[in-house]
Length: 150
Image (tube, rainbow, N blue to C red):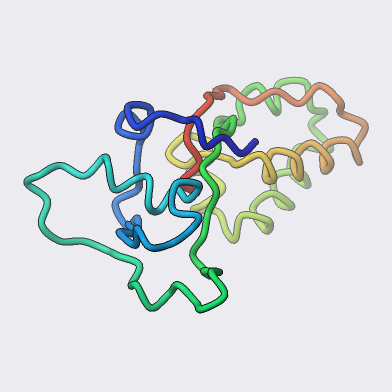
């Protein structure tokens, strides 16, 4: 859900990733709709360097490859409840398919233990995977509404 009404305080309270790219291009017509621009309000005055989107990213037609709308999303993590009612014969195959989807065992466990958060598209993929095995009650251990930086 896009929401340009998300206030600056909510962005400041958010968990902005360390490698985040900030934009300072106020000439962009869509700057107030873009999280890269809007997140610059969260910068501490002691911070003097970091990743940035260059002004040349803004094309003559007003488009930008780095545009990302400001939106709140429900992020989820934790797989303990997810596998609580799964039959033993299905569990290993479900875990294998999830590890492949996430790109390996390490990433799988980052989501499992809550170090990384699942975006809505990933949550939906998991729900569809479990539905293929006739599991419809897909519940993650944790979920929280946050500003989308992913």
